[in-house]
Structure formats: C-alpha cells, structure tokens
Image 1 (cartoon, chains in turn green, blue, brown, orange):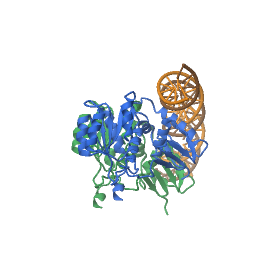
Image 2 (spheres, chains in turn cyan, red, yellow, green):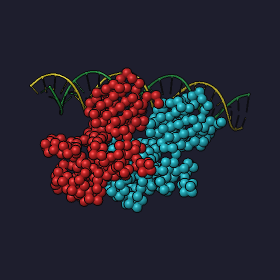
Image 3 (cartoon, rainbow over the protein chains, first blue to last red):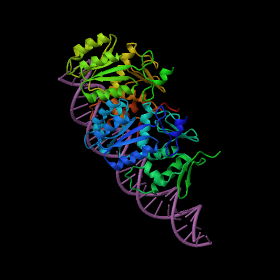
Image 4 (cartoon, rainbow over the protein chains, first blue to last red):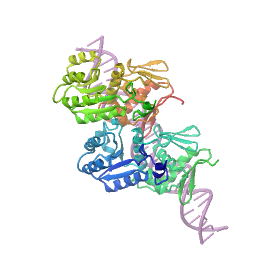
Length: 251
Length: 251
DNA sequence: CGAACTTCTGAGCGGCCTCTGAGCGGGGTC
DNA sequence: GACCCCGCTCAGAGGCCGCTCAGAAGTTCG
C-alpha cells in the first residue's frame, strides 16, 4: 500500500501506524526540556508524529488539538500532578494510552491503580529502548496500532523473541537472558543487517544518565555471543571501527 | 466471525461480549472520581464499553442513553442512595445487572435482600480482579454474555480453576488456597505466558488503597509455589527485573 | 473466648547482575 | 615485519533483587 511505503521510520523499518495507515500521534509531557527533547527525537525516529508540552496546562491545550493516541507523562509536573492531567486527558480522548515517567523511589506511593487501566509506567532513569518498547506494547494491546509484523514476536533468521513472554529462542532452543542482555538483543533484532555503533547502542540500551564507557557494550556483546551464537553459526558480527551487526546466517 | 475478531481485550484475550457480539455496556456510578477512573479503566481493559456518572441523577441520564447491561453502583451517593437509583434503573432497563459497592461495616441486611434478586455486591476496599470477576459472573448467569470460553473454568496446562466453585486442581489433585492466593493465581491464569510486573499484580490483585510494598507479591508468589508447583515441574517462573510468568510445562 | 487461619512486616541471606580493570590477541598501518 | 590500537575475555567487587523464615496483628469460626 502506498501509504505504508510513505510512512517509514528513519531507520527504514516500516513504522507502527494507526489502523488507517497514518502515523501514530504521541504527546510528550515533561518539564525537563533536555529529556523531552531526547524522547521526542527517539519517538520521531520510530516514524511517529510527536509533540511536547512542559506542564499540565500546555499538555491539555496540545492534546485537544492533536488528539494523541498515546501520552508520555511525567508524574511530577510544575503546575499539577500527572494524575490530574490523566483524568482531563481521558475526558479529551477516553481511549488514550498513558505511559508514566516516575522517579525510582516515588514508585510505590501513587502509581497504584495506574497499570490497572492498561496503562504502564517506567522509572527514571530509563533507557530509550524500554520507553519505546513499552509504548509499542501499550498501543498494540489497545488496538491502536496496526499489527505490522506478526504481533509481539520478533524474528531474525532462526532467532526469535517474544517480548511479552520475554522468551528468546535460537533454532527452537530457549535462551535465558539478563535484563540488559535482553534489551541489547532486542535493539539488535529490531535493526537487523544494520551496523550499530557502540555510541548508538549506549544511547538506546543504557539509561541516559549512564556515565560508563563503550567498553560495557563490548562486554555485553560477548555475553550475548556466548548465549546466542554458542557453538552455532554466528549471527552477531563485529565491524571494526564501526560497530556491530546482527544478521541471519548466510545460506 | 468478523465481529468477534474485532472485539478483543487490551490484553489480547477474546472479550466477553453480548450475545450479538457487540461489546458489553457497563455504567459506573461513584462519586469518587479517582475510583471511577480506575474502575472505568479496568473495565475498558476487558474490552467493554464503559461510561461513568458521579451521582444518581447523572446515572439515570447516562443509563437512558447507554442502556447498560450492567451497573456498578456505589450505595452511598451524594444526592440519593443506591437503592433509589436501582429502582429507577429497573424502570429504564428491567433486566440490568447490578454490582453494589459498599463499605465493609454497612447494612448487611438490605444488601442480603438484593443478592436474592440475582445481583451481587462487593465491599470496599476491593481489588479490581474481584470486581471484574463478580461482574463477569453476574453477566454470565444472567445470560447477557456469550460463553466465549468453556464457561467459568480456567485451564493452563494441567492446572485448572473453577471460579464459581473456587476449586483449583493440578494434575487432578485438589489444591487449597487462601482468598489472596486464589486471586493471585486467577490473575496469573487469565494472563498465561505473559510477564506480569509486581506493580501490575499489586494493582489488580490487591485493594486500591493498599499502601504496602511489592514485597508482598514475592511472598505470595512463594506461597503459591509451595502449593501449585510443590515437587512438580514448575509453572510459575521469575523473570528477574521484570516480573513473573505462568506457563504450561514443556511447551 | 480461644484456636486456627490469614495477611503483612522485618530481617537475613544467597545469588544474580552489572560494571571495572587488566591482560591478551589480532588487524591494520607504516 | 613491528608497532599500535581496537576489541575480546576473564576475574572479581559491589550492589541489588528476590526468596524465605519467623513473628505480630487482625479476622473468622467454633
């Protein structure tokens, strides 16, 4: 379909779209301009239409105009708290999905009830992969996104990943991964046959406040190789001076 | 059937629908906007069409328009009491199912008369799993819902749960569970092969006013393991950093 | 009124995960 | 062919996560 061909991510992947093929609309609400900027960029990279707001009042104004499919909402806002905004948003658009951003230690007190409505939350500091993945999950479950691929399952060669069950298999064999390993592999699998630099990987898979060096990426690539490539034809390849690629084995 | 395919819950399960395949219609009547919001979200998550009202007058207005299959009705309302609203509702739609919300120490005698008529009640504070389960039971018994699955029996692998009899068996053996254990297992069984975070579990299985920490979930998971997995091939799995999954053994 | 049960808190502990540092090997370059 | 740099891997420290035990408080039931 023409409209599909025209709506792709910057990475060349087909974008997750609304049922009618138009880009998904997302509103980012955070009072930290740097963070809002990073999030906005990452979501645009997914091929979505994104707008940002710095406080609750602005959020409502933009929401009325944009009628977003999803909202990324900081719980701590300068004027009101995120939960009041949530209620107003639901009046503007009852079926909107919400992904809350919250500080780690504030998690327990008022997050209660949030995931009950099908909404979700992510604790700061977070990785962009995690935010995007959660958002994709929300949209898919709410039926707002067209099922472009075969649901929540990623496949590259004989390697498969079920994001909901957090299950990874290679040639049918189950592979156990730690959280970071899982997210790294997910990033690779969502960008197959594409060289990803260590900087890119750090930016997407590790939290934005991570001060560490690119050395960690090498380390985790080596962990992944031991589990994913173990004794088999390798799928993870090093491109010296450039980064890493995941590709199906050449036949 | 096409209409079935289109009406699913956010979780991907097939929705409990009206006999003609359209979504069940539910009206929520509560003067606490937070509670109404949470209830509305949880019911929408089930794939139902939900509207909310804050008092008796508004409830009647909405009911005349929506003609709901079921009503969740707070007994204490700012303008009138729930029982007066009930009488009016029955004039609008005689076969409507009603689930009352009531304080724990409230008048048991009047409630007793109600449940004789086939309606049901839940005492505050309640868990969302309980409300949804009761509502499903009401609708099913009233013949308003199509039997999508095989009735009130849940099955995952060799684990079965009869929701009405409150009976759980594994490999034919009866398992005795406390109320909280039962609800936790029900939630897991209604979302098999799907990682559920501790926050999700807390939101659905524990009461909305529960201030406790995620630690309780770990504790109850360990209770369940002792009873459900006891000596057998485990079905309850921990996904570090993510949550828990229930899945049938050796797929 | 007591006994059994249920629910939740606190503390301790074991193990997994993450990251640092160091040494080594191999490719590329001069 | 020698050097240098990049990348790989091992070993280990530290922290965090999740599991379990034990007991207190509340509830139900006889």
